[in-house]
Length: 154
Ligand code: CA2
Image (cartoon, rainbow, N blue to C red; front, side, top):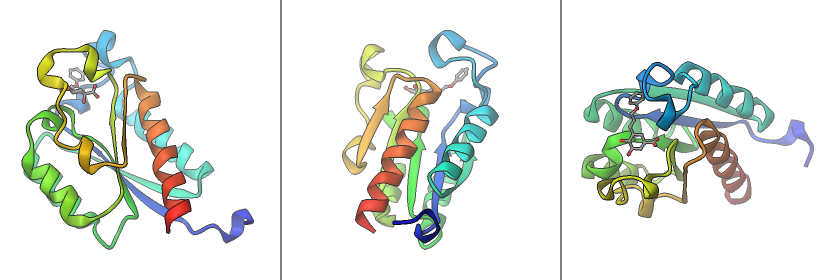
């Protein structure tokens, strides 16, 4: 298929609590990229993949639930780093299930090398897959996986 014939996909990237602090605190765990740098990296990767990438960060669970609900009929898939809500939020899980969009879960750090409470994700089993431990690269890999899935399945 030629590049012109590819449907422009629309992907929503969601970032959970405290990720607005990236690049300013804890670079040893989360790397030195700021959230703005991760978002522009994803926009550039999206252009290569013929996908429009829109990003949203919130420190509030309800705002993330609202963003997931609003993605229905607007976006083709969701890339999500729910941060600490990964390990606590039934509300975010329920919203992801409700919108029935393909989901990819990402984490900067390898959550399985960290405290036991980070080993459980409420999102993992409702996602196509999870990428954890590659810093900002986790997002790029996640976007590639999500777009490849959508190209094959829509
Ligand atoms: O590794 C990840 O991407 C996490 O989702 C990050 C969350 C953590 O609760 C998850 O277990 C794993 C924490 C994000 C906090 O981000 C900060 C960034 C800079 C400074 C402090 C916190």
